[in-house]
View (cartoon, rainbow, N blue to C red):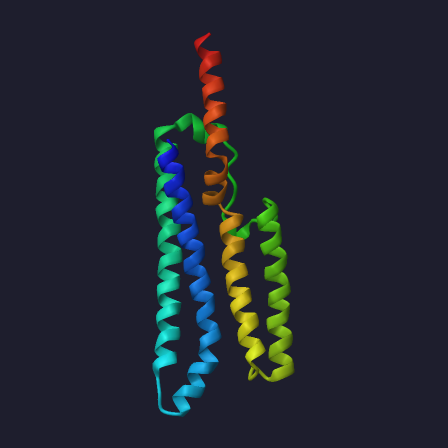
Length: 171
């Protein structure tokens, strides 16, 4: 029981780290362009590697948690029926405190992207900083508003509710 919660938490943290690496790749892109002009592609390759590795890591661990969540609900059909099922994280907003922070941050950084592109003609490093921040905050928005995060944080309360219902039905 405690083991599965730990696995879910590890997968969740690995997913966040993956999306952080994905976002960090944007910070290397303008540096890679400068190095490319000087004849070295090392930073460009590193940025590409970080992008794809981060994306793969982030998505893969979200899929693992999603499969575990679905399997849990298959084994415990009453848990599925008795729990509030949130919508897809992409289209949900302000579902919890962490989600509120990243929802607001995603909006602010999106505005920062637009303003920095207009003011610097998309040539300034600040554009890449805002793109990296927006990418990470958008990924975090999707995660913290999503079904997997709800499942991880509410799994114990779902189990308690099931135990109470089973106790009432056995009386």
